[in-house]
Image (tube, rainbow over all chains, first blue to last red; front, top):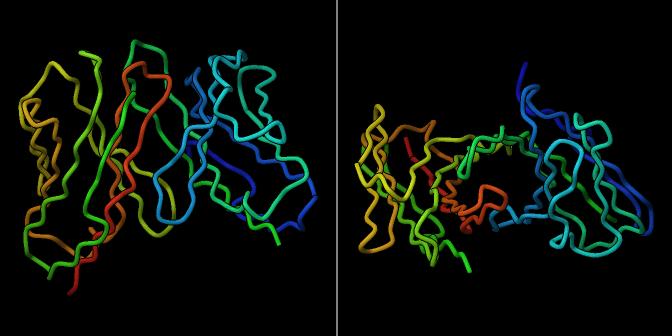
Length: 115
Length: 113
């Protein structure tokens, strides 16, 4: 399977715990994006990387959220001290640089439930 | 600022009927790209089509067709002879920079057999 891969697919955690999601993009894609989706809403942009550089992170929801892409390949999204409002699906997507409007391809998402 | 509006929250049709999903967008940029994605119950967003702002040609792909009209800032999606497998949530999206994509709230389509 050469699509975007996310892990874990489902995570239930207690409030206050830290969680980390992993994303493996399509192999030749140098851009990687994180989005969040809540019920009844469209995906909401969080951050993106071009290679290992995080070029936009102002949309991360709070300082409890952080993302890394240390070698320009896979990425992790960490949420510290989780709150019930963090319950959502976290989507990863990737694309290849080639001018604006490049299509982004999504993974299956990681569902987070904070109890 | 960029914005995408999908006014139809839910649509139900009987199998074999045609259905049109509406999308209205807002941007001040002259160069932009519009997209449609399908999200089945499994959750993965599946890319359907991309259209750039300089190409207003309508497109047809099998039972799917798209009508892009800059004059009304609309990019509507029609499914002809709908099938049960078309049941999903459909999202319209817009990007101007290719860095950030703006999605509508989605239209949930149910095709009744």
